[in-house]
Length: 351
Image (cartoon, rainbow, N blue to C red; front, side, top):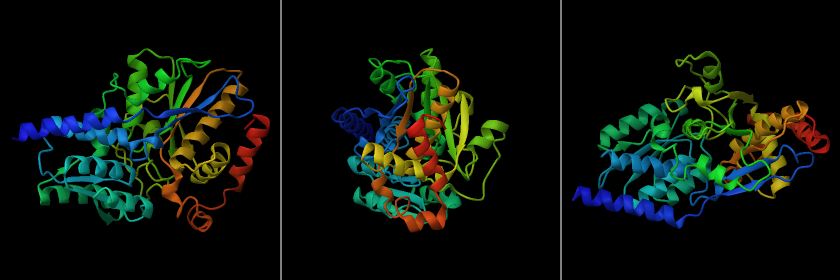
């Protein structure tokens, strides 16, 4: 009977995938960028509204095929919100209980979305999410999905419509069909691992750049190779940056990394709203700010080529944080210097 249930669960997930269209690739219309165009892979259009929809699907299939998820299994995940929202969606699809162990600072809109899909939210101090998830899984005889360990291995990086394959397929008719760079931020590290491995497997000349927010140890690990690094503070940019080196972060597939100040990330989403006409999350701001820095460097060196980055999720989830002036002033500080920098770039093409 369990085998029959697992087969039916996999069928439901695959049927859900067949009903979902691919996400859009948007060319950003900015002066001075004819020879260095910027494209945004819009992952906010997934059914659960973020890049993590891909990861949640892969983690469920991985758990089912490994025999870890069975009929009635309670699913537990440690998450800052977006992965939990997507996993709650798939848990409801399969009729499974779901508990999200999330930091106490998680945006209220994310909590409501987890609960909308039938999930329970268990709020704890940020450093406790790992141990508390393991404790709950043991207590309830459930399955701890552990995105931070399994993200890099649950996705088939060789193909199977992963995000890298999708980007290159959508770029085929563009002036620069093979991008010079893909730029992204890391939360688990699973997506950067997938893209970096795909680039090597397909023998692409594209380079992978990863941006890291304040209070994250990924960049320091990339430079030092020290996996024991930790930070006493969590990232203020939800969904990216970690206070420890997560098992899924594969530094060896990354060509270059940059630190993006949190104020720059948030200033960029306000600038991007004027360009796109809609709101994006602050992880998207980190991506775009890093991509614009890179494009400015390319232009200064006389280089040509496309740069692709990601819209990770919608800004509607962050109306009470990144889009609230009082919250930004209290928690991040003044954005003005970065707002002026972005305005100068749009006017002149110079950083």
